[in-house]
Amino acid sequence: MERRSQLIVAEADILPEVFSKVLEVKKLIAQKGEKSFASACKRVGISRSAYYKYKDSVFSYEELFTRKIVNLYLLLSDSPGVLSSALVFLHDLNANILTVNQSIPVDGAAAVNISLRLSGNSEDELDSLNSITELNGVLEVKILSAE
Image (cartoon, rainbow, N blue to C red; front, side, top):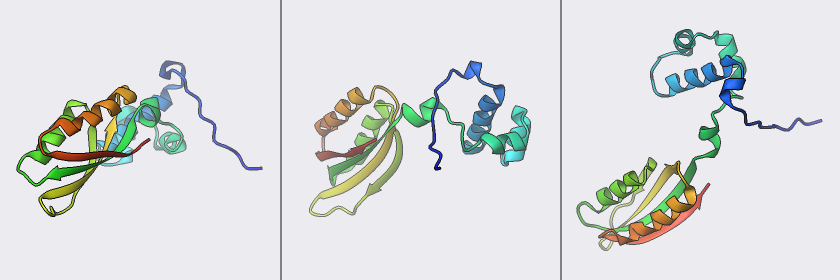
């Protein structure tokens, strides 16, 4: 019989401390705070075997569920500062920009695809994204996907 994955949400303070420490190790490695899993485990005070036992099963709630990844298509005028103003606009929304791909301008316009992560009230943020069209030089905006 195939075993299905089951997720449970619980307050961190009622769980064994090892789960929080596994999350700390993952964060240290991701942010280059430590160069190896061994040194990260030593720093937070857990064994490597405990880390490897839980690393694929322990995630923060915020990491998995409260952030939305949005793929955005923009058609921008080929003028200095237009892409920069769009990126500043996204920064002001507290969006974490994951990727930016811009094509070579053709006929005075360039297509730009941006993947970003939103972490607040996603409905309000998605509505705010549409107001990017008000920026000078933004010719077209499409939200391609929002997960």
